[in-house]
Image 1 (spheres, rainbow, N blue to C red):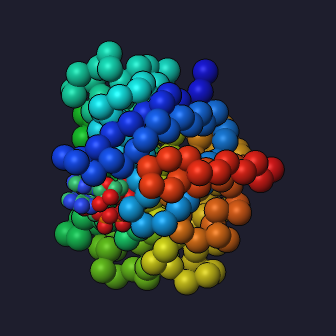
Image 2 (cartoon, rainbow, N blue to C red; image 1 turned 60 degrees about the horizontal axis):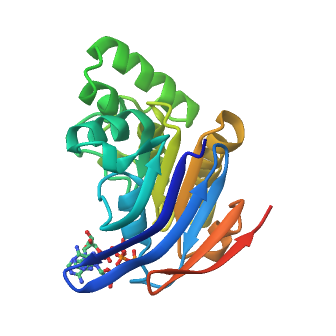
Length: 224
Ligand code: ADP
Ligand code: ADP
């Protein structure tokens, strides 16, 4: 089944409607770019996709489970094990080594310290940071920090990778590099990727672009 299926999802904060009858299906191995102007509902859609927000109307099937059937604890477990999240500025923990930053999702899920650190070293090697495991985030360039954040998001082998403006803080070379790493998840490992971006070049790397406007799907374009 699909990695993510929103069916006629609507959500409003106090009075502001943020999503209006949005339907969206993302299949395993597919990369979907969500675009649209500021305030159109992109972040809200990502929160829904992560199971962080259960919408007021419509249904959300996340990794084969209807979110309405899960309580908050079960949603957190599903998110920790099945969903990877990358944000614009990486959001590494400043006082922790890169190795421990990347190991964190495993440790939070009850993983053994030594085994989690070994997995973190492997993940860092996959993003070209094998030498940087003992560095702290402030010693890294923006591009390196973002690659470490991607390694952290991928360490649980998530079936769904959610990225909110993941390369917006990077120069063109570092951005292309970080984007390649995320797209490899889908193209090589069969995970689904949802990429929120305002950048047309980034959106053009997706399989499909879903453009939101005032909380509705305005346009859907198949790109490849
Ligand atoms: P985008 O990510 O596209 O900028 P958002 O999903 O952040 O859009 O916001 C959609 C709408 O919902 C906007 O009108 C925004 O102001 C509103 N909104 C978002 N989060 C909140 C919140 N926590 N409380 C109230 N309104 C919110
Ligand atoms: P993004 O850049 O991802 O669209 P925003 O800057 O719109 O993020 O929002 C940042 C945070 O503020 C989010 O947690 C969002 O839910 C919240 N937020 C956005 N709009 C409003 C609003 N009108 N009232 C209260 N909180 C908001």
